Image (cartoon, rainbow, N blue to C red):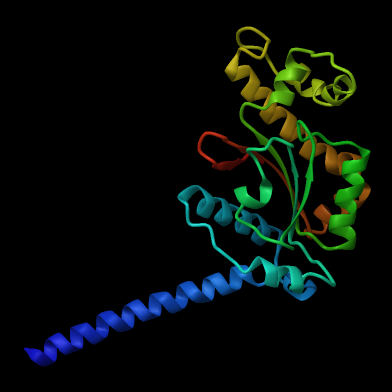
Length: 236
């Protein structure tokens, strides 16, 4: 009986140690900064999967804690992010936190309404063709003030020109009910259309990005972040 208890205790302790070791190994892997070689070993599909699993950790409250000061040192001389994210400037949607990524993991370009223009495309050409990022995510979010402003055709200084970039998505969205920002279903539909159309515009307006996608060296997708749950849903 004593031997059996001893065996069970040893087995339980060994199993627990194994789980801790696996957890430590996984955390060490997640905390390791991306090098050019590690970046090249990641496929475009792997890059999207890495963002997806990071968002699952964020939503479940299991974000991984890393030594950020060490990451600063490790990325001081070079960077090799595995993905680039076009996001809104909204304070509730910081891409690194939403996807549970850290210093040196992702490029982030943020502007109200996460639309695409020449400057954005140029930045993404650098991120992918020059630095080697394997995926681009155009990340919209629920209850977006810029989208609502575009729907209501708000006029306010330079913001007028900013919102004009989102107006094509408004025009392309079929109206079910009133075509204003009080219609939550319409706002959501325009938000999704804006992200999807922006993602499509990247390869339409950039031969460089189109070539990378055709060569299967890059994936371009759109996604929507729900600010009430923190969850990201990929649209394409």
